[in-house]
Image (cartoon, one colour):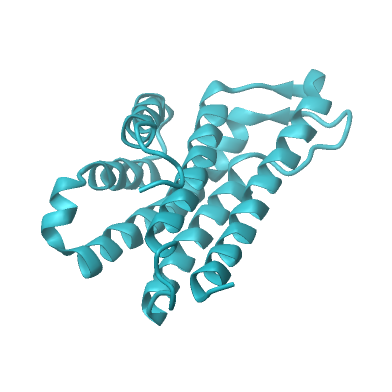
Length: 189
């Protein structure tokens, strides 16, 4: 295995743990579904986090897959910090596995944890933009505007916890992610 393969394996482990945590939390909610007060906003935020994790892993593959010697140390650290931000968001966006019979209110959970989730994601987006500027130049970043719009939206979600604002911005953010990522191949160029 070459250097890039080792780095991609580490990133795959972290993203796999993030997705695994989300699946375990979802399983707990579904197993306890009679005692769960469902909330579409929480589930939409979880969907956004999940798709962002998958897109980020594919982006890491595109960034490092062709580097036989691997990235420079700081490239790796920035990418690792982006992945850690995603992991933290994934750990928080859904409540940990609920015990059978225990009451779970997803709207209350979202109200409690939303600033943490969106702050974690803002770090991820900010590092992604910084990585793009350092290694691709401002010109490349200007042509790749969705992350900038996404960062502004995520910061607004982290700063203002008003549910009415989140009801508007979270669906818009998910639509922006889907529009900017769906046309791309996950692992291709």
